[in-house]
Length: 380
Ligand SMILES: Cc1ncc(COP(=O)(O)O)c(C=O)c1O
Image (cartoon, rainbow, N blue to C red; front, side, top):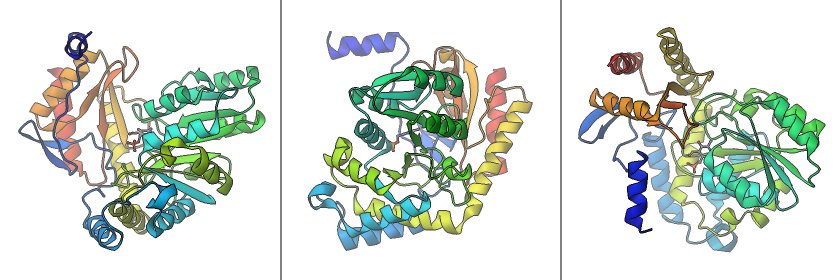
């Protein structure tokens, strides 16, 4: 089969995906149309903050634009160490280790923690990078039904694997709902299993200091590995895994997606440090974000839309049919609102949706505009 044949098959199945130029601020231009951006992970509005741009500039001039090598060769710079110390403090752990992206962090950590002869227990709606990490690890993979701690516990009970790892998103990327982390910790402790929590959509958003859901629930110290990303609420790029010093030392030695790749560039690191300063100094950003998200969820729910059970900045509107959800997303763009539509295979068959993502930079007027466009298109 040629590339063309394969692409034709994807197109015929209605699944062809193409790149569209957009932007990161509240208003973007997509396909020549000015639109309100409601599908960005820039939850705190930091990606365009001048303090981050200034910090990036200073770091580039001090250390260079690129790190020049992987961390284990000559790419480990003082600014990496400084950021890792900040992230460990934020996460209430001994240590943290940077990775080039959340995708790298998940595949690197999972494959370092489990391998052949071990078992990994993964929520059915975990992010693709977790799924890939599980597959790559060579461990036996047990996928438990979404948020079903009873099923997780019975799978753990049936397993006699050498090492067992439970891995879950904290806030699920497509549904915006939260994993039952407290119950997962109890079950893990009962069955002597390790836990890894992906806080991609919770870092900077939840918890008294913005560390994530683990902090919000007071579970730090009970989770083996806390993964967080730097490209979403923190507005930059990259990711990290936080835990004990031994865990981080093991990742340095075993996580291939950390070892065999160039270190994150200094301007990104400088900008992340500036973002952490803002997360610390301006808790009102995350408070406002959660208020606005609750408001959107409540208003859509009152209008009769199925918005799921989340409580963070990801607000899905379940449509069901893939073609319908994608069509609605197109119609919304025509009305100046950019919301992405997701269907199978990104979400399970029959659960296609529009996914709204709120930013602290959105105003009540922005939400009004989005809601009236959604109602308009739905009544279409
Ligand atoms: C839950 C989750 N984990 C991991 C990732 C990957 O992070 P990154 O974009 O930094 O690779 C994402 C999104 O991209 C995500 O939603």
